[in-house]
Length: 526
Image 1: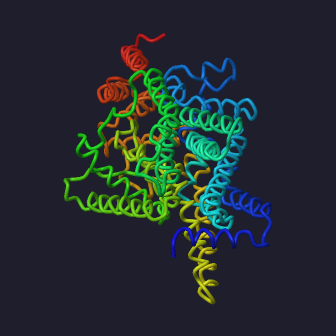
Image 2: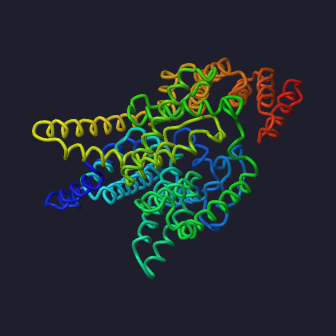
Image 3: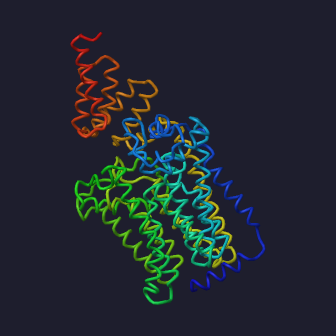
């Protein structure tokens, strides 16, 4: 059965009298609310202490220009790595602070509303391309309930992924509409697309993915059935402003970050091993999409021993298969191919082709934007299989899909409760990954904030034993030792912190602490 015939049948089925559209929108909203209901009892967890609670950059909305400027460093309590990197996200958090102060309920409400808007966008995307509202609803429900998206909604750090995805969707819709309209409306929709692209980039750098999606759209959707590169001059003129915005944004980002950009750390120690680790990341993301059972805020990707490493081979095979499958779908059914390409293009900036600075090589919230295309494709495929089925197999298929969505929603619901507090989250992480130095460090910090210095010290020492060169545990352990009167040990930890992190932004503070402790040891303190 050809793609055109399937789309025609789906369109005819969708136009028959059935459930009113408003009921589908409402049901999608209820599914979203039900799955994430527990998170409204969650507090500020993990990075929220730096991003929100102790972040002076959020204390005010004016002048707006300050959100596009560097405002200190992580050591001084501003958003990592600098406030100006993601000004739209920073401004949205400042809006939340203006409305809700330090009540986490309001921040969670904003995240849920943004997630719901993204789910509506996926609904419309799949509906428009497949010409079936049922396929669109299934795509939206799959996107809304998928456990792999939960971190992006629950964690306030995921706000950037929510905003970037929303404006990428809006930019795509605007660009597509300008292709269909004429006159002033065409100009208006083109302006919407350009503005959305700019806002998506300022929300998060992954917003640049929209440019790649539009290139695929122009070549395979607009130009399908024509010459290989139809109307090249027209297409270039249409996409040139987007390319210009992308270049300007990248120049701006480099200026604001002051060189603290991507490419600062080869995870495997060299570009070659980083490339091999990329295959493992692709495999893990694909596994997370289809089998989202083992969720974690900390994903440790092992360094491959060589090209014949099993994980590398598995990832490479899956990646190659995905590329071949996408090429086949693009050729036979360009609209489905566009969605598949959306997924693969979305993975490029988060697969460490250029290494991402920080302490993680992959994160579940980074899957949020790429899965827009895959969830839309999944809803389309599920409904197409339903139409092909008949008799008892159709009923069985409906039951299987309903069960799958229920299990996805239940997994998201339960995962939301794990994020209740820093203690609950990182106790879970330590139980799941006892060899993770980062998990022990974060659990130690939770104990430290709770005033349980004995347990905090134990967790920090465990983190250091697992990774002696991990600088951060040395610094906080030094604070604990200083507070408990073990000044000589504290000095050693502060020195270790500076040794393993010579470029520390709070280097002067650490040196001042060492000088003060030496004074105390000499008995000259007032």
